[in-house]
Image (tube, helix red, strand yellow):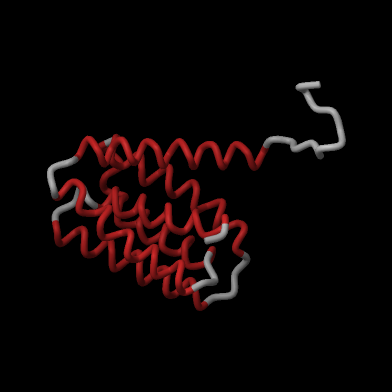
Length: 150
């Protein structure tokens, strides 16, 4: 997998974790929304860079839905948005298959009475997304120029 594929797989994991707090019917609607939005977005020819950046914001929002009950109503919409970002970001059907297969085990965590583990994983995903977003805005100095450490 390339570096661009990790965002897609993390989007699926964050969606599965966020949807795991719902009852089974709501969970299935969220899975269907993710897969449908991902399929539709994969057929469009949109630039992947903005969608990948929006995907990191979706990961943070999905992780927050597990920690803040007020945001729980947005889980289905955020899952569809994450699916759209994942569909635009990936060009490989293999990565899409991995993402779809990852969403189901991630959704079973709370169903198996492990809500603390789901919250820990969601916090980890949010931290990775925040780090990735912040690195995009930091100035990068080439290896042959002195930086702040010299």
